[in-house]
Length: 116
Length: 116
Length: 116
Length: 116
Image 1 (cartoon, rainbow over the protein chains, first blue to last red):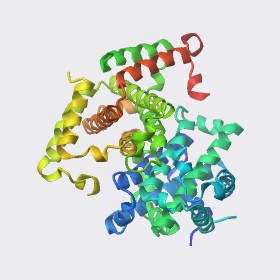
Image 2 (cartoon, rainbow over the protein chains, first blue to last red):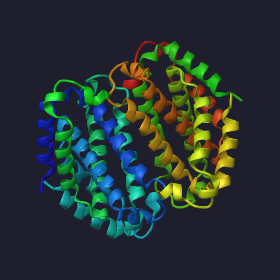
Image 3 (cartoon, rainbow over the protein chains, first blue to last red):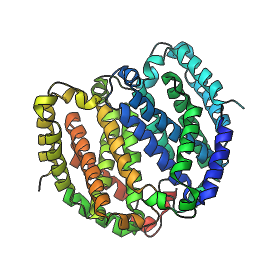
């Protein structure tokens, strides 16, 4: 399995080979993330309840979804790498924060978080 | 370092402890990705040229950026895990595709990709 | 009632008074529209079925929603005005196109559009 | 010229003829706005400085832009109409708020707003 550090290396070389670092500004990479995420949303925007899972069994939808997820991961890793941010560490910190913010006792089986 | 597989495990347990799987539909997770990406874009939307890098030296902006990147990674991993999609493999495939699509000889030093 | 043409005039004067035309590029205005739309989505992203209508009866949610809708309209009018695009005419054309694309006989009472 | 009220009437009849009111929830309409706005952003995401204006002289780009702007306006009007929100009044209020928030004396000729 290729991990995020290895993907960051590949992306660094990819951009350097093409002299594209200049285009990879925070603003442009954030725009790219917004565009790719909305392309993912476009696939499922009218689905209802759990029907999106059924859609994902269609090979064409599954394949588009894989490609959008890949695009998001690549731009995300590229952003963190260019900014010198430790993505994995940031995610771990955020996860710990969420554990505190949503204690099981108060949030189990309710969607309070989602409606407050 | 905590890798994406480990993060997926943590998120699975996190959701399961709270009975939140029901809310993690493709549509909802894609919406969350769009919302978080736009929150990242909001930070840099008016920056010009390379000025975003300077902004990132401000501790408050750096910290917000880290948190948004973390949110995106966590929702992305959660989406792939729920959908049974191999995120790392998809990214590797996409990278290979991009190598073919943008041959160095034709794209080096130009932004043709970005304006065509 | 203040119509879109009048709002365009106000926005033109507002930007000119502050010498802000230079910031109102297609890219920046499109980013602003993406950011504001996602702020609207953020309000309703976890709602289920028709529950969003109930949320809109809460004064605080209603007021945030009004403000996001206003922001979107203002940036939209500003974009069209700067680009010399007739927004109302474009909308009328698009509506006519949609009438042809989704004939009542084939789409009444189904969500085929939304799942195909 | 067809004004926003008239467009709201057309959209109401359009949805009613197809029994589509059920799909036009706040969440779905907000998602649609996010998707359409990002499609607009996609057109200009890599443009630099004022180069977007030049792009807009290309008939194909101009025509795509018109269509995205139209989609945004139509979903926006539809949302306001379904929610019983007076869009024009909200925009007028927001404009007045912005006049107070960004006094000419302090913001003229600077992009402080955009970087603070």
